[in-house]
Image (cartoon, rainbow, N blue to C red; front, side, top):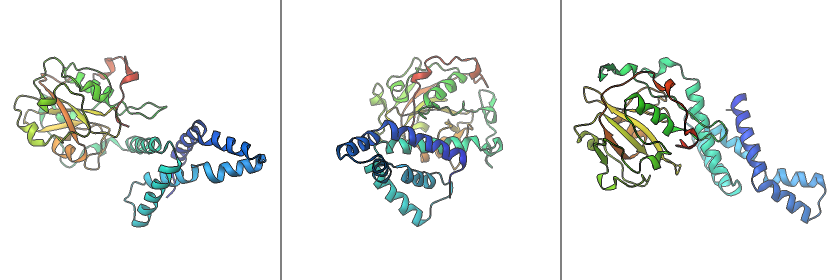
Length: 298
């Protein structure tokens, strides 16, 4: 499998920018100068021993596959991961870049009709049909590829008439906002969420009778954490709005059942609220104030 032209270009640009900015290229120049080698030998040294582009491209091809890897490809991917972890100082950032690139590519190429599963919800939330409730869209910083999950969550809770704090995901979850009914876990109500915390189980959400909206904080590889919106419809079915997480193989803006969502992502903290209405398609009235710190999952 080879990368399509557009994806390959983006991967190559990421590699080139990082190769030039990291210590590898300057190191090649330094070592070559110390041993007084000719320019041709210097270029050979750089290409032979220090550049990671070929291995990174091979790793990208395997990672971007949509189908399950066979045993040999899996072994190859693992070997490349071990090697690149040692030789490439920005490999961790590269893996995050690929994850977001793959996620963005899926969203861009998924028709709207895919969002409707065979189990399309027909219930309502404060009189609004669940079919008409959609998450605000996936967003990312076009330069760093850091996703803006907290900004998306901010727009979502405004649609539910809730006022909650803005900031990067885990910092926003440190303290409950006004009118908070309850926090989970209660003994960590005023603590910054940590991905190492115990999972919040579905039964815990079910045990709280008075709530129909939750500001949830989810485990993430990023130190910023991940944030999403959860709500409970008029028939007590619970959903999550999170365009950044694939649930039951679907990655889109439609509501996902909470019972399915927690199988895909670990919820570590939640602040519970009560919403009295839902306004469809209202995010276009909001400005982009504070966008620069609406960091999220990477």
